[in-house]
Length: 600
Image (cartoon, rainbow, N blue to C red; front, side, top):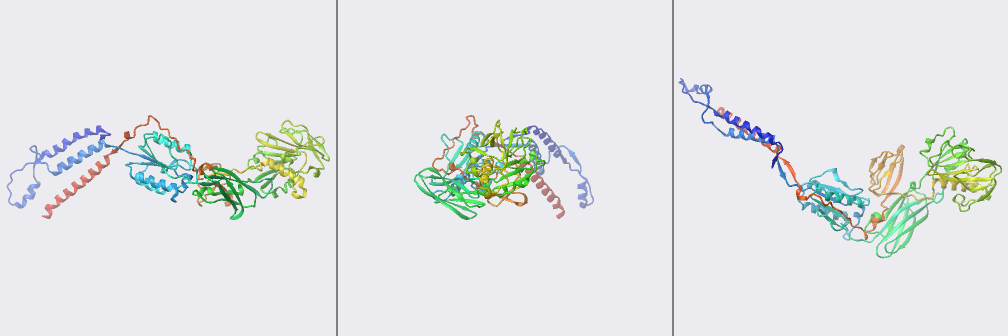
């Protein structure tokens, strides 16, 4: 026990004043009266004298106790109590959803055993942590054991994989600090020896045979193609060969099924070369196993990026036909109305009979640009008709183009350019140049491929699609999004609807972190337009339950001992409560004593 304000004990000096007050006692005197009825009046005329033996009754001792308690309250006494705060780290990552042979999930077992261990502990307070999507403290503060039992019962498993490095750092920090006396860690991942003495580990789960879908990627093989190519990674995490079947559906309609046989612990790729058009795609793996989360994967047609084109030309009608190409949107501008800021929200630009005044910040195509512009410095010469002399047949820009069928009435040829190379030559110079500058791709043509006529001019249309595909990067795989990995909120999006149906406000340009669930997210933009986005587990390391590396925890050598943990419990509030109770008791007794003569 101790005092936070011991100097207040000086007020005990006023206690003798209470004794002095009681030294004044009544001195009897002899008076002759004519009647005893005047006794009460005589009593009122009594005289008091100082001195003699004090008349100490119960009220004196009660008031002495109240005064002493008041002085002690001013001194702020406290008790030193032995505290035992503990921390609980409950792994709720995706792997904890795997079912054991008894049918219960790892997370259910971990939660039950953690709750039982907490009940058997003498914890004074509890810091409760969950590990996914990132380790975080529940409620952000320590809680009572009763509240901790409730929070454990309310906890749920996440679809996000575990961040082993973050878990290790958290456990090392808790075990090395003097803040807690014990750390209870429940997970399917074991701890590598030696285990820090303060960590009490609960390891749940057993090895299960698991078959998993990894990445689910869509791409458009050629620019303008409607059909999509799907590429799905499949893994067999079992000691035996396994026949696996993958079914892909689009908007709840089956689009195709593929089968593959994988050897023990083998990973393969299954392709669907031509999937029909759909908004939402879903891949399902058979046979089922004890970990259902990685047997399903999602994709959206929006993952194959729509290409936005800015067409700058004195003849905007030449842009007609481009918007008939699947996955293409077109905005036209005259050269006088064009500003470089308009390139901020588009994917590529086409300058017809014009050239920008500064190097574009996006991939760009220049059609018959004027000679001598200060940015590109083309040197050109007009030719009519255009005669094609040479081309590189293995160049992607020339792929499948029958140049002999091209009928180019007029155009221009380029002289040698300092940083752009020719991939199509005509009589007198180059007809098609390409090069890269400041991380962007640029094309320059000495003939006009527009307007886009499709099948009505098939050779030119194929060349145009090749050129636009080169600038737009068509053919690259969509990477998709994974659980637990934040992504930037696109421009115009103000809300995101989670797979659970919960609407979460979002701010464009900021990271959206509420991506703990696998499924389809709806990005809500202007006019309540919803754009679907697929988020998958997509982590084969999480699906491998046979080779799970234990966590290595390094505890600090100079960590304070758990038995040094203690706390101060103030007694001031209890003293004040006792004073109030005693005052109330004295008031009740005095009131009753004053009423007794009247009732007699």
